[in-house]
Length: 242
Image (cartoon, rainbow, N blue to C red; front, side):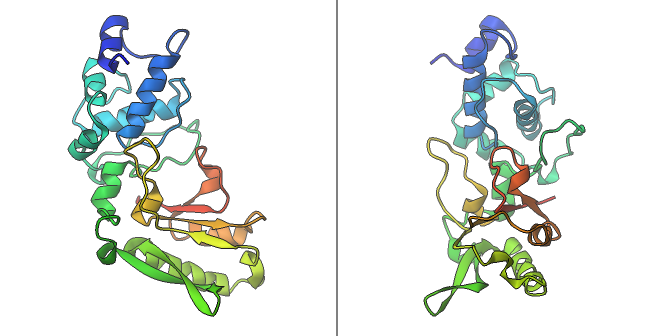
């Protein structure tokens, strides 16, 4: 496969349009390897441009959203190296969004920023994760627990208290499984999910969650999975660091 920089040098900046789909797919895969969340569509859409801007911003480049030869050369590097050299977005100036932005943009959702905030739980989870009991769920006689980053654990305990005050206590009666910490990265990618940082929780249920339950998470700074185009899961909640 030809490098991204060779495409740029031979054809100019990477733009969407006829004849560009393979190159844009290659770009999107490279961005995912570099720790950004986007789908491989072959179209240079708004999400792709935002990820390019984040990449440029985190590496001290001019933030244009255009894949020039300098940006392409960086994306040709191994994903782990790009992540290691990136400035975390926790200290970066925000990028202005428009009303046309297709979903809530998590400004600190890239791997470099998540590493800066949560470190690497899969390397030393005993230090970085907390075991949080789930009041309404049991394995046999034992209370079910999930592992979560310390930042999320406190929020979950507050949410459980809010749930206990709801009029319809069985809001979550059909929930059969809860997933939080999972150390695995995406197959074929350097990108680790929010689960790997203990920063997301996902329930399994055959019914859609009540709005009251969703609001309890939103009140604690979570993004709802039903609003994330790459997840579209009403039982997924990810802690936003802004």
